[in-house]
Length: 253
Image (tube, rainbow, N blue to C red; front, side, top):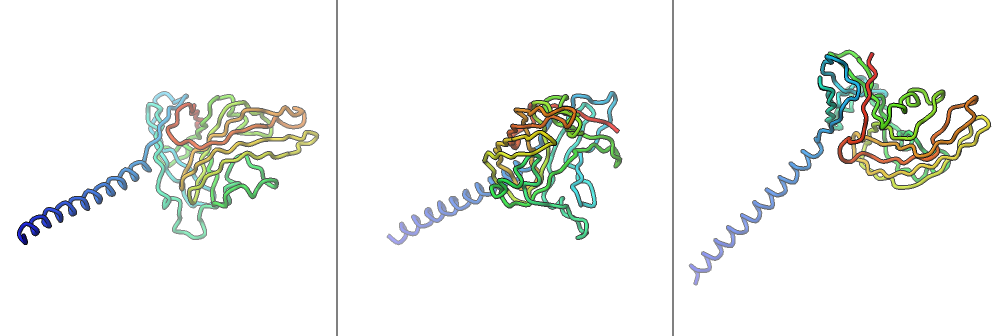
């Protein structure tokens, strides 16, 4: 009996060890998939590449930081490849030249400041623009991700140019993950015009860099002799998978 019992115990211990090994292997594979997923490369295509264009770095320069940060590559065929760096890349060894961060509500292009501020998560964030092109360490241009080229003049100067219906995209950096799902309405006065604007946020943001899509759905037409037209209904989402539907235009130096 003792011999049989010992054999059964040996078999049982073998199964237990195998089970523990499989659990550890599953955990390791899960972690590896997580790491690989976080290093996913997003791709796009430049609408107006230069003839004989050289490959360039895609970079950002957050306010306050003492250097630019490379976030991708522009290939010679006009392909854009974005690979976001780890959070450590956004820290400086110089304490006096760290990235300037503020509450998330200030990092969003559209917000309801002064009226429904308490609805925004208290998360530190940075609005990062422009997205720039660099060749051999020299500034060479800027990228405009939009759904229509007609939106670019307004993005360059919203005070004197009218917005167009469509979507434009920006980058924001978050210190930690958060969500924001709400509607808010704000009122702004421009000379004689009182503009009521509604923003619909549908955001599931990760720590680090996030592409934000601002879709202008309605536009208030002001007196053109006084000021430009104003977006009056905007949906705000973040890009979760791929950069499909974006037209990438470059303005070269």
